[in-house]
Length: 298
Length: 319
Image 1 (cartoon, one colour):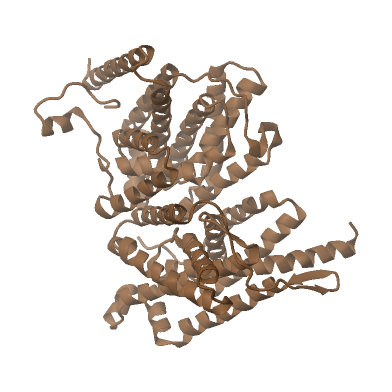
Image 2 (cartoon, each protein chain N blue to C red):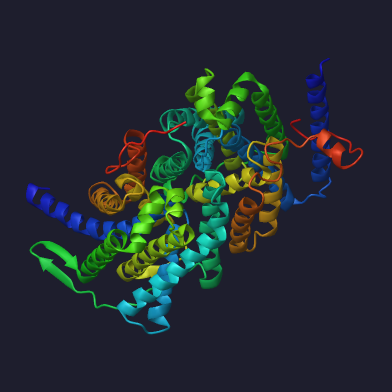
């Protein structure tokens, strides 16, 4: 391969990686927000994304919604699911040992996956094509309309999230609770409500990711959330867990690395590459790329 | 004869008795092939659960990638018997050592992490092991390693299980085991008291991984095949459920958990979705209602029974 075509392939894989990465970033945002506020790795988050994809499927196939109403429907439904899960499974455990909550989260994750399997059958469903896939040729590079759609939707959602977190009262409450829940409570912030809101927002973002993936790959199944869920977690850790811009950056980096690995080495090693990133980052900079070191007090 | 030795002998006697009863039932064909398979599976699961219990229960490190070591044992054992034509005992030892060595290599860097991070790292490593196996054509790649002879029988798996349980029980009561328990209770305090925490964490992790390897060799030599799909995160979760159900830190708890859950999955074999729903609900409800598991970190013993009823004969395995 000469230098020219190598470069083309590199840029092409970058484009693919950025669209995949913005989906990871959407899911990673929820992980990071939930971790930031209650220090829980919400294993079920990837499955919320799956639930979101199924809600989008119901909205488009059975209710005949277009893209925008479908994605809003999925986000509302998944947000509600997130609130219910937090209320039923996590809130009673708030003072329990970390391991106990982690096990509960794994339990919730499997519960969602297999309940969905029971309801919707394990067979993959075909996601209806809402958009005519147009392929644009920019010289030798290929970009399709779905990739643009993913990128634009992800950007809009991230801007909206940044606005909510940084400029609104609810966002300020979220930041206060994640900084120090007890002190926030003393200042008159309703901690329970704030945590519910965080779950709702995080789950809604994951659901949006689910719908976008459904449109991109045209296929959804009950176990689809497993791998992206773990990948998004890796993205969150990579950027520094608990830090919102970190999750966005981590998601994009991870997506690009995966695309490059599958383009230049082999797609079978794609997953192994992301886990290797996770382990390296945990070993050398456990606070993540944007994280700061905090000393543990005895 | 001191008390411990006497108890050990009693336990050994009980084991011989249990073994004799089941072997007779199998020989008389009262226990058919389906339940014989499940009894072998119970023995394998007991080894897996009690080895994971060494890491998660005694030492308090949260590992959820146990299936990776099971896979290493299964494949290395199969390479030794099928590809190299060596006898079964050599394969068992090789599988054990290979998984233990890998556990050592992985444990050394990752055990510096704690809590959630360690959990995710071990999960990732378990998946990496599986993906690597998937890409090695020498062992069959994605279609699995086929043509493994059935060399595991109820007799050899039962006695290997007993030896491992005896080892784990003595490990817990040894100075090393006490050091591990101290790390579980408070790592910083243990460190201050002069316990080399890294050494003991890696030791527990290596031993746990090695026994998972033994279970792997037995597993692949009973089911004729080692397939990457048998060693996913789901499998690790199965083992974790057994340990947590019985109570983290209780060996008899792990044994009970393994037996109960193997029976449940045998009954629910025809409804795989229900099986996982039952598993996951068990986990959630258990964590909400009784986070310490059935036995907590206590051991089921003759004493415990005496409290309940006046007298029940026999001593449980491992006590």
